[in-house]
Image (tube, rainbow, N blue to C red; front, side, top):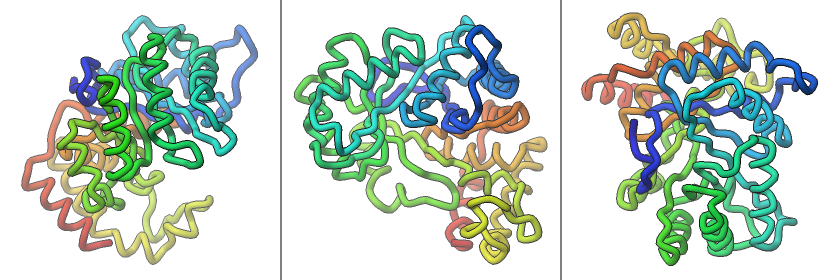
Length: 307
C-alpha cells in the first residue's frame, strides 16, 4: 500500500477505473448486479486492489450506481474516488456540493475518500473550485481533494489555494502510458514529486492497444481503427516484442501486466478498466512483482523509438 499524496489514506499501487461500467445496463431494483461487473469487482478486491475510481458523468451516474450495488455485496474496505465536472453552466461553488451529494446518494455512502475536479474548464476559476472543495472537506463529505487533467501550472494554483485551508492537493489524474508519455515532458511528473501529489494514470493501456490483442494483422474494428490502423500497429510492433519477452521472463505475465508494471515503476497509480474477469485477472497480474531498473530503461528506450 502507498499513501494517497500527502494524506493518511492508503491505497493499492494499482486501482480500477470503472468508466466502462457506464455502458452496462442496470438490472431492475432487487435484481443482482450483472455477472461481468460482479466478477471484475470480486477479482479486483481479491487481488488486494482497494482503490476504485469513477465519475458522475460516466453513463450519467450509471457507473456510480453499479459501484453502489457492488459495495453492498462486500465487507472489504474500499477507497472510493469520484469526480465533479465543472460544466460551463455550473457558475457558483455551491454547484460542487450539490453535485457531490448526488454522487454520494448514487454510490450509497456518506462521504468519498477522494473527490476530483474532472477538467480545468472555465468560466469558474480553479481557486473558486478549490474553495468549494475546502467547504465539503470541512463538512466531512470528502476526505481528500484531487484534480484531473490539470497542467503543471494549474496544479500549482490548486495546490496553493488549498494550502490556505491547510488541505493538501492529493492527486492529479492524467493520461499516461507507454505510448503517451507527455507527463514526463510537460512538467507534471516533476512538480507532482516536488509537491508530493500522487499521479493517477488513466488510459494506462491506451484503449486496449497495450494488451497485445491487436496487431497489424488484427486491427480494431470500432472507433479506434482510424488511429490504431495497420501502419501504426506495425510501427509499434517492436515495443510489443519487448513487452512479450519481459512477460515471459517474469513467469508468463500478460502484456497488460507488464505495461501496467512499467507505470507502477514510475511511482504513479494506474487505473485500468476491465469488462470481464479475464481482463481483471490480467490487471491483477501487475501486483506482487517488479520490473528491474534495466527492464524499465529498455521499455523507456523502445517506446521512444517507436513513437
